[in-house]
Length: 385
Image (cartoon, rainbow, N blue to C red; front, side, top):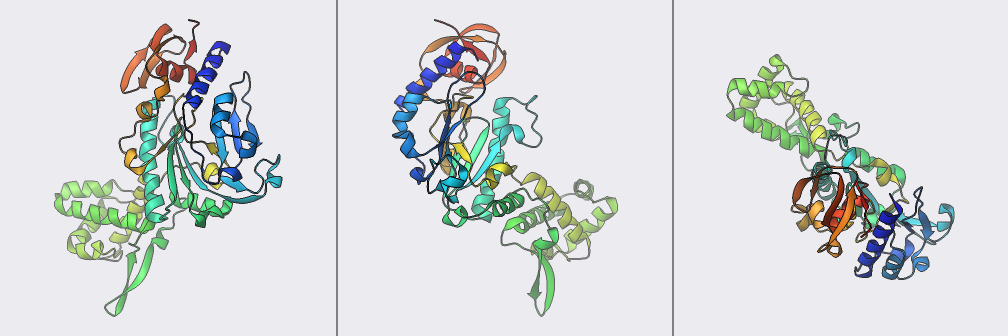
């Protein structure tokens, strides 16, 4: 990035903070603060600061106009101490991080930024299912990171004292690492005898059970050839097993709907194993393990600007999620309404502010919010006006 571009962005970030009211996180005075300035050369993090060192946050952000702003997930006795051992760790929020360019099946080289963000939002909704249904966390905050994805902060008192190993168990559960299908099955009493059934009250057992019932209902409505073909799409089910399972589904549907994995013979259990594999492929959330297991992580401050996009790190209510489009709704209003000149150095297709267009190389006059987006992402340089 050229010096003129860096100076311009720093100035405009300062203007944004002069008119923005950035809210503090809970227990802000017990958290470590950090920021990255607009400096030439290697990225330099300024950290080990407390709110006492920073002073009034709004004034600090206006004066320093940082490229990135962070606060710690942890709460400390002395957050401004110069070493982690001296800070006196007390507790930490549980933080989940989803990055668009780390999603399975997404190749950053061939997938556009807009497409990656759309895929990441889908994974966010999967993650929120776990947070709400499996863990029943209550004190949560969803944040668009301003760059490649989303953060979810969990501040329930019951999770703040968890160590890294306990947090890793949560990661393993959400990502279905080494999922024990046998553990999803329990023995229950039934009219004087016992039977083996899927756990249906929540968790992965409930997920597999929903798939089992939905598939059984569809199979009963299909013709035989179509039903057999559908079964053979599942892992480990060939033609012979498909015929056996289809017969069990049609003659023992009520038992299957109750989650009975022994209904009619071994075919139902084979089907459960296949659907468990399908569920773990489609319903896990590819969260970043190091972020969640780190009890002292620095995470982006909601309301701040992301120096790699010029977009707002935006906290979102659950009602906003369905319609939220980061490349429209996270654009700072402060950067709208006037044209600037930039030199486009990386041409190509761009999706921004509700439109998709091709940027050609060379000098261009664009709306400032688009110009800042291109410059921050390394696709343009500022032209002297």
